[in-house]
Picture 1: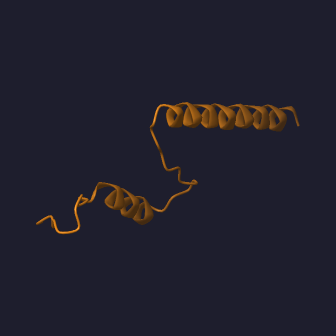
Picture 2: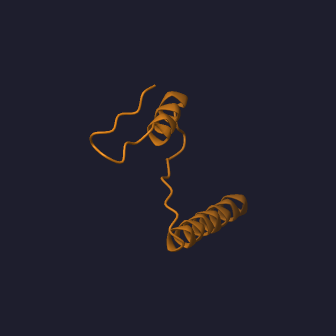
Length: 65
């Protein structure tokens, strides 16, 4: 019983710490997308691909790959 209480407290502290770090980062103009665990490797790779693909600043510009 005590182990489950300690684990729950540690998980709660970890969640609070993560939320605090995320809020501090956002206050400094850093925006992070969080993914719930577990994440399938294919989904993780797709998210990375979406975040790293070139973005055109003007509609007339096209990035050649």
